[in-house]
Structure formats: C-alpha cells, structure tokens
Length: 155
Image 1: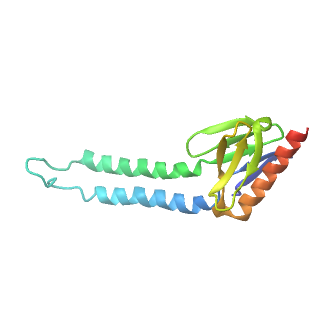
Image 2: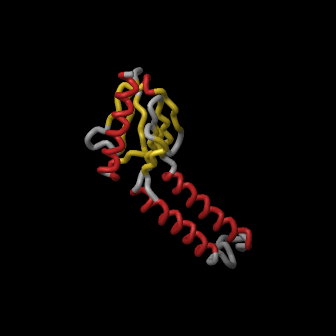
C-alpha cells in the first residue's frame, strides 16, 4: 500500500506515511484498554448512595474507547492532491481547494513539522500530508508540488 498515487501524468496524491505506524496501533490499544476496563466495572461505584455499575456502564466504556480510537485515527486524514491547475489540501481539521494562481510558493522550512503553501495574500496553509517525519518522501513530495506550481504559474 503506497502513500503516493499518480492518477494520471499530471495528478499526484500524497499522504503521510509514518503516522500510520503510530496512529493505528494506538487506536487499537485505546479501544482494547477501554474494553478491558469495562469488564472491571462491577459492583458498587464506591460512593455513598451512588448505586452500582450496570451493563450499560460497561457498554458506555467500550463506546468511549471506540470513539477515542476513532479520534486518534483522524490523524490519518491528511492528504494533498495536486494537478496542473489546482491543489487540494486536506488536513486533520479542514481543507482547501486552491488554484495554483493564488499560491506564491511551496515551502518546507528547516525545523518545520510539515510543508506549507505561502499564498499571495501572505497567508500560509499547512500541508500535513507532507511531514518532516517522512523525510525523503516529504522532500520528494514538496519538489513535485513545486514543479506543478512552476508549470502552472509559467503557463
């Protein structure tokens, strides 16, 4: 399963690679931990007149673990898709679909956690799909985006 997809000669897709090795096991571990903990919810809740744990409490604990696990999996959402005319950036929260004409340059500064798009109005958009942790893969992705940007601006 590659993280770079070439749809046609002009369209590229990048997704972060190393975060998968972290997020998936953590999501599974959290869901598993909450499931195991739910079986420990038996008897009294431990407070005066507080009642006792029921099956619904156990189910709620499992559900909470699944929800937290899904929240961790949200870190797999980032993606950037670019072609000759525009770039679509999807980050953990939010996304952008921009024509290359509004992008001043594609940046990947030293010590930056991910690439950025510098726009003509001096705004910056983070590109979470190209992360410093992915090293050469991210650098190659930035170079490809720069080539697409240069071709679009020069055209």
